[in-house]
Image (tube, rainbow, N blue to C red; front, side):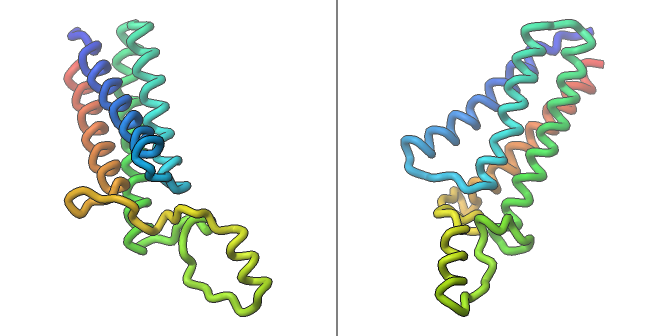
Length: 158
């Protein structure tokens, strides 16, 4: 059986790079994450933990199973990224706390309630994009590629 160490290291480095870029853009770049952006980080945290555990405890069966688990984590991450892109394009309704529901308050009390429950960073508004693709779109692409890579590595190391 071939070693699964190299693909695990690649996945670990890629996940750390994505999280590092997200944190750098937040703390040094001034981009405040929305509720969905924060949720999209969780699969990367899980992937880091899984990869570290698989590298620390390199039992053959566990390391290979970790690749399949990582593929599933990144499929879920791609799903979150696709959902967020859909919220940005108004294909899907986003969380009520961070999307514009289009409602117009009829009274001052309704306006106060709406403002009290609205986050400063809206999930349905793109804060930054590269090449016309939002960060949520780039997360979708990166997650889908990582899922394919992890699954391919799992199959290759059979």
